[in-house]
Image (cartoon, rainbow, N blue to C red; front, side, top):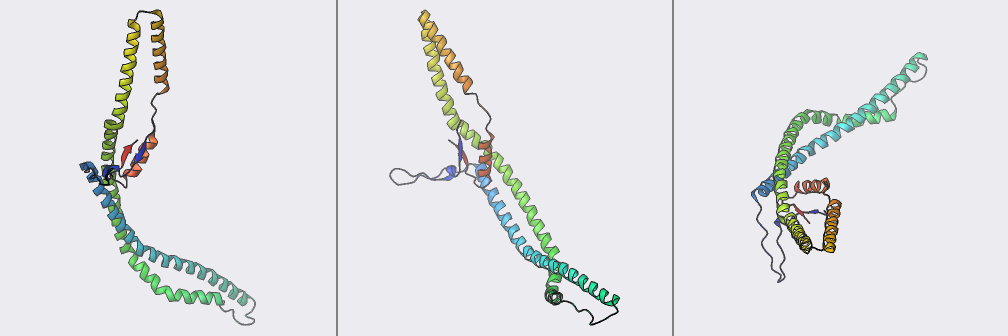
Length: 237
């Protein structure tokens, strides 16, 4: 069975031939609940993003500080090694001075030292606020998922009552016609008619065996992906 998912069909108006538009069908209570849950999740996600913005800026300061601290440690080690060699050599010549690179890094680190301390001071409070926002996002996502499953069941019911029922009705009409034709052949009481009846039955069996239904999980996955953002997503032909 070739099926696809369309989004928005349950809440879109339809263009009529005369140019006017019909009113979009009203959402069912389950779809209303899903739309509200999606909106709450969007709000919670936006709040989390806003809470993370200053943290990202502080993390950038702290990350740069760690780079400078690592570099300073390496340069200080090199300077101490040079001084040790100078001492071992009897202090001949000038005492080894810090390299220009070490001095430049020390100056830069000194310039942002206050920023580093301030960032580390305020981070815990910001982290706690972001954690509360993250918990709100998780709760809103769970509510959205719960509402989504209810709508998924409704979407399946609509598909069954629509295309599936129509297809089954057409199949049954064809089946009734062929069975009636088979009965008519049998009623003729002719060897040739009976032979034709057997051929028809064999053909029907071949067709039924060739059209065995197989599970197709991908359409369901696409529906869930659509419902996560669109309360009007439907299963459509």
